[in-house]
Each structure stands twice: as C-alpha cells, then as structure tokens.
Image 1 (tube, rainbow, N blue to C red):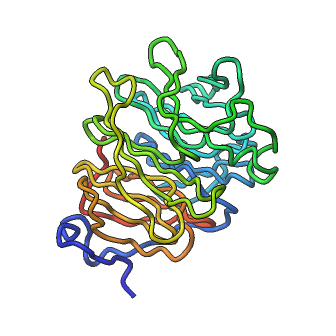
Image 2: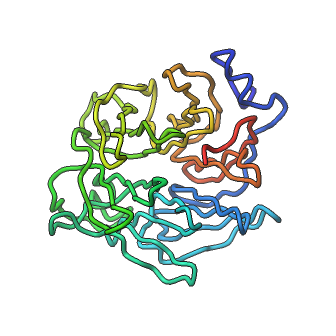
Length: 301
C-alpha cells in the first residue's frame, strides 16, 4: 500500500511520488512535541511517560537522550532566536532553554493559580508565546502528577513577548490541544480533543481570526472534524496548508478546509513538524516511533 493517498488533485503538487515514509527510531511510550534546530541539524522531541526528551541527529541518523528528567515535557517549539520553548506537565509551566543551557520559566500561573498542564506551544513573530492548557498531565500519574485543576477550565493563553504578561485568549474549547498560525499569522488553528472527557464530542480543528494587533482572536469557524481517532498536533506549510495528526495518519488540509491528502503511518500519530535544511522534511511523532517523509512543500517559516 502506498504511504500517501491523494484525495484532491492539489495534493499532487505537495507530495513526491517516489518518496517513502521512513521509520527513523522506535522505543518511546508516547512521542510528542517535535522541534527542529537548523543550526545543528537535529530534532528534539518528548517521550512524555518516560520523562525524557530525545534528540535525532539528521547528519548521521543517531538518537540520544537530550534531557532527562524533562518534567514530563510535551509540546516544544523554537523561537526566532533558535531557543527551545517547552511545555512541562509535571511543573505545569512553559519554559525556555537559553543558549547557555539554563532554563527560564516563562509562565507557570494565571491570576495566581497554577496551570493545568501546558500541552502545545507556538511562538508568534512578535515574540509572544501562545500555548494550550488541557488537563492531560494532571489527569493521572502517567504523564505527570495527578492533581485537581486550580483554574477549573482549559484555555489557550498568550505570554507577551515584551513584558511577559499572561492573558487568556480562548475560553470556548473543552480540551484545547495542538495549535498553529497561518503563514501571515492572520489565523490561529486550535485542535479540541475534548472527546477524551466528553463522550460523543466531535474532535475538531477550529480556525480563529487573529485581531489586527496580533494580541487576541476574534471570529471563529469550524475548520475540520476528525473522522476517526483524534487530531492532536499540527503545522502549517508556506502555502497555508494544514498538516495534522489524525488517528493513525497525517492529514493535509487546504486553507479552505478541503482534505487534500493522507499520509498513512499505521500507528497513532501525536504531532508533526517540518525540518531539514530546506524545511521540506515532515517529521512525525507516532506513539512509539519517529518517522519522516520528504515533501514538495516547505515550512511556513
């Protein structure tokens, strides 16, 4: 069976016919949060239950432990200065790893209350950090430390890039999860995996219009509904197409919401990111393994 299924002719311009899905490494309990570092040509990702972050060296294919303990880190990204920004379940905070290796806490509370368990994160061009805060890291002791929610809700937050102020920017999701901006940052896509706690609730991606000042969101619209399993993490390419985990696959959606194509992975997919010198290599975190697929498109930034 082919690794790629074309649903719309537009997808033919995005995938490479003879490129194949590569299984790069296996040995995780729950792989998540891939982030690519172009200067070193390596990928960092989280293995949440094993309380470690892993490192894949693109130059020789080797895999090593990047950080352990990792505070049950989940989502990761890089900022415009090439620094690692991470969501930590156990400490219920968002951190930044500085160039010298020290760790700066960007936020661990909102209005005096501890976050639930920051999940996924993206950095805006103005330096602000946007992240989701569902309860998966405090629901049990498997991916963090079981605890009650102090906030009592699951929101999307923004950390101001200038003064560090934390604001709640989205309050209408049940369990906000993956998030990503469109290339021009006029749209924010947010996954809702509330079906994990509310049986029968659709698993969706909602698109929010970002206000002109870039500090909050306005109107929202349903972008996509997952037909089987869960959406989770997602990224956007330079054409505005959304590449998202979807059950045991990766789906690609056009900016108009059309399902263009499917990458068949074969195990539960948690998250994706673009890497490689040309940012045309899609890295895929399956539940236990790291995969990649070269594409005919590139990362948005």
